[in-house]
Structures are given as structure tokens and as C-alpha cells.
Length: 240
Figure (cartoon, rainbow, N blue to C red):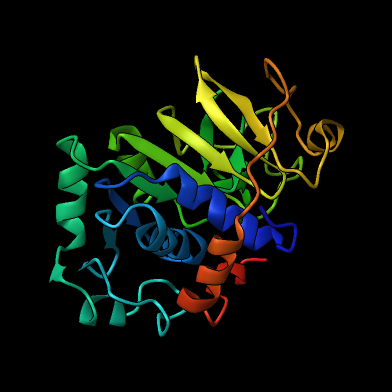
């Protein structure tokens, strides 16, 4: 284990550790951190993982020159084959997509995800991108993983302002902890070694549910060394 890591390194390794060999995994736009995590998993423990992305690339050989949108043409140019976005939705609805990485702005204890508006829907304070892939992929992918680089009471709220989609989440990875969706509620799966249960609760608007406190596994030295090679431009830290 290594203590010489940043939050972006930890979250990338946590996400990579959630992925298994031979799984088919998809990431969308503005998904630099999970994109790097997928590449890390393929280089460490899941060589047969199938990497799908928005431009349609399958198993891009490198992400070193990938655009900051994580949707650059190079993800197709350096890939093994082409699999367009409409086919990914079809793949998921047929039950063949193992993991989908998705985002959101608000989450509540019941697993509701808001990616549509902040405030009243008819007169919103902020209008967000909307459901897009989340409305299709969260209900249909075998495992939906959400990452969020902010963990505060405006993000993890008592009740979301708008239900873009709900249910069928698997894990939510944040700078403080990992949530798991279990028995219809978000429950604490682990807290990161640099925080405390008190800090996590102070930054979460709903009461934490957990059987016992488990600490997230630290990145290994091998993982951190590999990250420097596969992500030399530090795309994994863009959102921080």
C-alpha cells in the first residue's frame, strides 16, 4: 500500500478495483476519471475488459492523447473496432452491458438521481444537461457506477429537486466514501482512510446507514506507478 496519493488517484484506483476481467464497460463524455480507471484495470488485473466509449471506439490502445472531453476521435482512431452509441444503448437494453459510468448533480437516500434542474422544474435556478444516457443506462445496465468529485450537502440531499432516474445504482464513489445501493437505499460501503465517519455525515444531508465502518483500500505502489505511465497528462484530476 502507499500513502503517497491524491484524492484523484484514490478514486481512480477505487473505480478500477470495481471492474472485473471480461466485463463490457462504457463511459460517456466528461468522464476522464472513469476512462483512466478503465485503462488502469485493463493494464493491471482485467486484460480482457471491453472498453466502450461515446465516439464508438472499442478498446483504444492508449488514452495519452485523449481530449479532455473523454470523447475525442483518437479513442476511435486507436481502437480495435467501432461500436456506435445507438448500439451501446441497445446492448444495455438487451442485458449485455456489464458496467456503465454515469454522472449526476444530486442524489438522495432512495437512490434518486437528478441531472435535470436545480430548483423548481418550471422556474429552475440552474438547468442541467438532463437525463441523456442516464435515463436509459442506469435502469438497464447490470451495474451503474456514479462518480462525483464533490461530496457535500448540496450533492447528497434529503430529496432531489427532480428525479431524472432512480434505482439500479450499484456504487457511488466520492472524495470521502463509497456508497452502495442496497435494499432500496444508499448505504455506506466504505470510507476513505483520510476521513472520518463524522466528516462524511457532516457533508451528507441524509443519515448514513451502515452495519460497521469499513475503510477503502489504498492505492498500491504498482497502481500509482502505472497511472503515471498511462495518464501522463493527469486527466484523472481534471474535475478537481
